[in-house]
Length: 389
Image 1 (cartoon, rainbow, N blue to C red):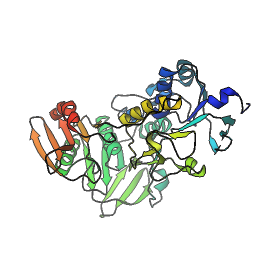
Image 2 (cartoon, one colour; image 1 turned 90 degrees about the vertical axis):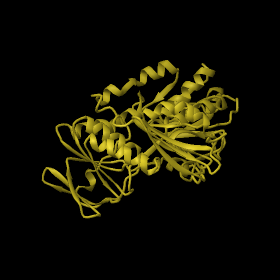
Image 3 (cartoon, helix red, strand yellow; image 1 turned 90 degrees about the horizontal axis):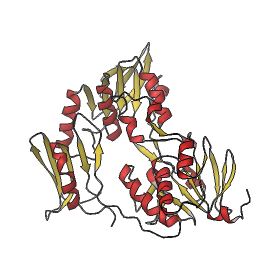
Image 4 (tube, rainbow, N blue to C red; image 1 turned 180 degrees about the horizontal axis):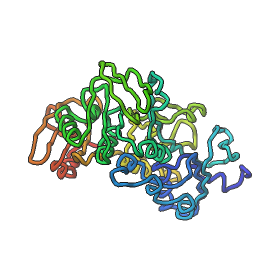
């Protein structure tokens, strides 16, 4: 392809076919139907809802049923070129070209929507290499195959994904054991009283907890895996799922001299330090914030799309509560900003629980709503300060 053609100079190239990549393309197409767009992805290029991975089992959904639109449908619907099953090897920021396993691709503007990887802890034991993570549809398909006909699943991590998988597996009839170094589930999101409420409800659903400890070793003993914990307890399981958190994919950016810290550093226009290169989604860090949730991705896509076609727009983040997908106890949480001064107060209500994080002068800075209290979500969200104004 001639790198100097007007088309290549104006072309937008997006790397990554997750929610961030496809949402920004949808937003561009609302504004401009003709600008050339190319999507490069190492996945097959279909569109599916990643948040459904941790809730699909109880809904009896196989991996293939989670695909809402195949790649050719996305290409037609959004009028773009998709390079699927394609690895990006390097970015030449001077020539504005991307070296891929399918050849060189020029770009006018480049968007990194690379997502994040599941963190893998360095575990010991003969079965350490059998530990699995679920981070995409192919992972989920492998997971479903592994647990088919089995009974016991152990989960390392009592955060958002760990709790959602625990609830889903319990509803699917599995014996579930959850291990976490923290003394409570959802340690980064919930105050202790609210966490205990969720723990009790998930226990009633059949989840067993091993908290304030972690895994010492995982060994294969016949048909089962033996998990030895640091506190001396031992549990056995058929399948061991690690869900200890996400780390933004920053390696490609680093190799291209794009500034990174926790994630790929961008300004409020979602621009990196390299001209014509932007980032959004789970891989991006905006003013120290990495927010791997649906609502921040939607906000970022709506801001970035006009910027990419020449209408520079600044990203704002309103208060964006997170819904925890645990049917055992409906939970919505909007944690206070890191370092916020104040304290939690918890009020049990009929059929639920309301926890408020308030500043010393009584301003609402965060909340956790459970059960019947989730009805207050909209009203309380209006009281919260913006995350980025």
